[in-house]
Image (cartoon, rainbow, N blue to C red; front, side, top):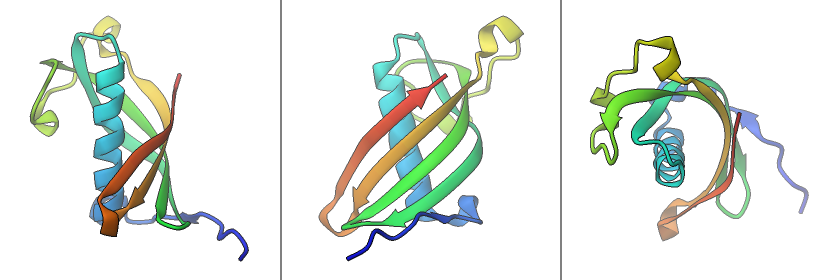
Length: 113
């Protein structure tokens, strides 16, 4: 069985699976970072879906630091920092592997620069 190539996800806003995977990746990112503020997604730069034995989401996103100290429960309502030295925008490559019908979700790659 050949590997199926990743496919671009065009309408990222309406892709529930992608949004869930992204939320998971950012939550894990926030847990792992030693920043006192939570970060959240500024924009999705690219997103692909690859069907393996589950679904793999391959994403490149820009994340920014919010004014909410950790742990923030409702990230989407957190404002981004305005001050340039506080804003700290980062580009991250996330790969999240999911098996929705088994409730499995894993962050395989988290690479931020």
